[in-house]
Image (tube, rainbow, N blue to C red; front, side, top):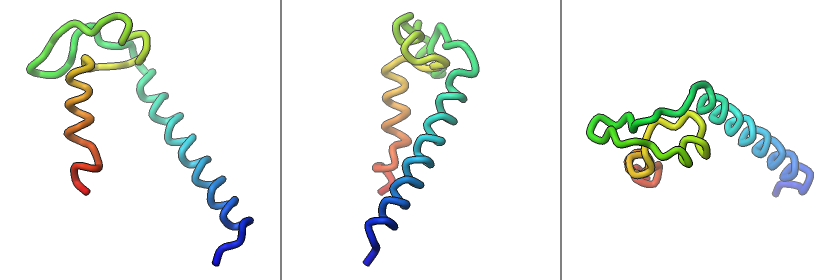
Length: 78
């Protein structure tokens, strides 16, 4: 059985890894400006300014982004 100290250490490592991953994703997203129009090949609709400001670097409208996230969801393969 693991001691509390070992569990605390493992939790700290996990938290640090998670925070690093979040920083890396945010850095990639913020590299460029948001697209004004959805980059999905079948959509091309304007991306509302509120979304472009809330999600810097976004490339897809809300509907297409949701479809992409659902398609690539890990639960789909589990």
